[in-house]
Length: 304
Image 1 (cartoon, rainbow, N blue to C red):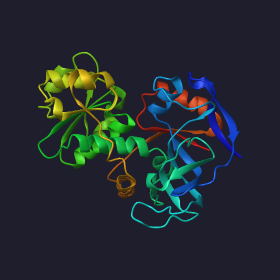
Image 2: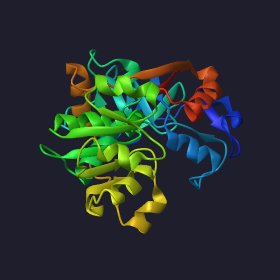
Image 3: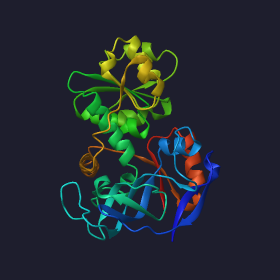
């Protein structure tokens, strides 16, 4: 049996409990992971509260980001480059219901983890990292671009801002003032969000692209600044997609190969993703409470 975070009804963090589930066996193209770190994501909360409907019976498991050790391998389970997956491999990526002692992962949703990639960082990289990659694929940027990133101190924003800067763009990122020093440390010019944002951004440069990694504010600012809607991408401001005609973030770049490339960047120090706090599995309610009230840069991670 495996201990896992479960919930029997939609609601706040308090509906979560720790229970036991049967140990699953891997099917073709699947592996069983002993979970060593599992990052929390806003989408986990949105599903648990019912904001994002889920057609699945209760009790439900929670989580998708994972880093762990391969315990069992199904038929035809190989990495994205064709290398066989073997028991004992250290991997990271996606595993449904990952806030647990064990989870099932598909081979196309994991990459091998190098020792130089910290467990807690790897365990929170799948959604944030690949959503950021997708932002840059949807709206490519480079030398000469000035990119406005909304929510630049959130996990997606942190990665997207660094990838944009690495591509040669000048990056302006919205954040609360307490996170400005951190943004400067990763090469981002910070600007305080809230009323008057457009005027403050206009003083910093001529924006050529906008990435919503938190909410609609930067998209509205982009419209006021004259940024073409085809140079704006949204991951959170769902209503603005149709109303403003901006791009929804594309999905095809969310691959194990791109995940492996992010791991390489973490390993060589050209990409950072801070870990804001680490909780035990038994403290999962506190972990989600912190996630839903946090303005601290980086990921909140559970280590079963």
